[in-house]
Image (cartoon, rainbow, N blue to C red; front, side, top):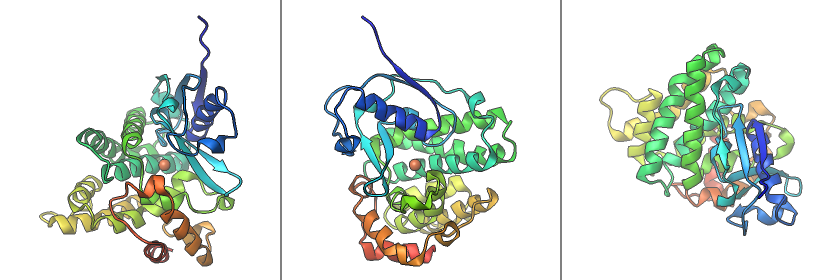
Amino acid sequence: MAWTFLWAWGGGSALDSTKATALLATHEGPISRYFGLHKVPSPCLPTILIPTTAGTGSEMTSNAVLNDPETHSKMGTVSDYLYARLVLLDPELTLGLPPFYTVITGLDALVHGIESFVNINATDFTDALNIRAMRMLVENIREAYANGGNLKAREQMLYGAAMSGMAFSNTQNGIIHALGMSVPNEHHIPHGLMMAVCAPMGLTFNALAVPEKFAVIADILGSAPAGASVRDKARSAARGFMTLMDDLGIRQGLSHYGIQKDELRLIAEKAVAYKRLMDGNPRKGTADDLEKLLEEFF
Ligand SMILES: [Fe+2]
């Protein structure tokens, strides 16, 4: 029996496009028929995925995120049939990634760890993966940014991104992805950069819902004051993420990225309607709540 595989190496978009191609090779289009959760009815072409960034974790996930030209936003198809048949993790392939892309892809991976860890679908198994992944990413991203040739840091980041990918495939992401993916595509802001900029909003908003977990995140980010209460630790997590952004040269605030104030309402409305992402978010909110949050971090 002859086997046909699709194989790809590249960043998250390349891997996601390959998954979408594997889907359309065996199912009738358009791809929009499969946007959402578990809409793929049968197996796709098998894939071999080789990441060259430590970011999306796409090589380990059941997601393919694509641009939808009709809605001008990023849409995802999620199906167990999209998992790769084989994954190769080789940190040498990430050595040539420039510092800026190292940072924005790495911060996306960290956001996956955070959103999956605090998700209402989290389990002991995803917690174990996420705690380890967040540590590996936080402990190595500054080194990888400062010296892209640091193979040990690159390896730890690649593994961390893959582990958080494994975890969020079981939980989905949350409000940070819902907000970031609701920013209109015409701004052409890379996914990881948008996630980093929206992360302090999600950390601030969600800390109240699962303070014990945010206290763990704060410990990992190094923002928790010694001897602080769980509540105070949890509240410091957003500050810890912002300090990390400062160290990595990423500016905070949506206004730095061409987003206008009069767009915030639409972003909030789109985000709140992003069921796949908001259903598992630990804190519920209205479009008004999210608009306020967007304004606070504008
Ligand atoms: Fe992401």
